[in-house]
Image (cartoon, rainbow, N blue to C red; front, top):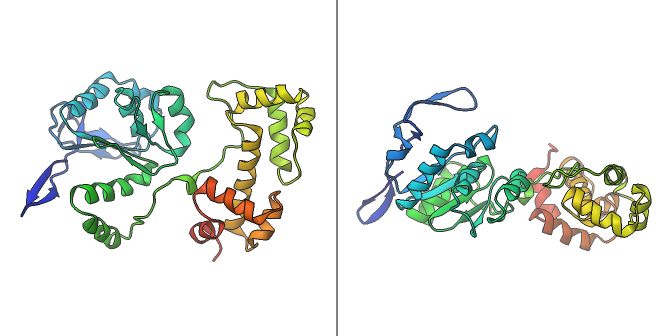
Length: 298
């Protein structure tokens, strides 16, 4: 993608599709795409790495592709990534010591592979100047509007959003997070005692839960339980319990007409004000805002 000018105003120039060798490529859906040129000879102001599907390790091990991205950046191109595309940019080493984002579900894998990158997967989009990272696959919409706003104008970006019926106010991915109840540490460490406690918490999260109870269930001492739970899951037992309750609350907000006080009690909390604050912290939305956005009721 090149930038041109017209009457003193910056414009987005022609969009070119490139592949490693300049040959047609087949997407994950099986659709073949014609390509304009090899990536190595592309002279662009902005290089966009699209979402990746399938085995990320296969592509991130492609030396020729990584070098082409690295060289494009060295030539001054802004490299923009979407979803798992950030893995390719991180593979070049360019993101070391910098802030980035990716799809929220890839957080643990990204942190394991690239510990030197300051990952903020709660963010929908991060603009680092000479690079831009967008979150989940459909965050290409957010990226497109951001590029228009940055290189043309915010007014034009706003007009585009209205004409195309796009939400131009998405800043975080947290409302879309889905909690994995079967968390394992990034090291792959498994602990049967802790797994027993996890299963119990999944069924009884709405009850009063304390450390002594969990240590008895897992058949280890309290201190050992705390240490091994964090090692096995990557989070503390308190954080795990909070996420179970927040996930249940999200479901009730989507499929029921229960009020906030009823939901607060149903998921194991007593104070609705504290629950509201925690819900906003975890999802980025108030319970009312979440219900308006995601309710599945007619």
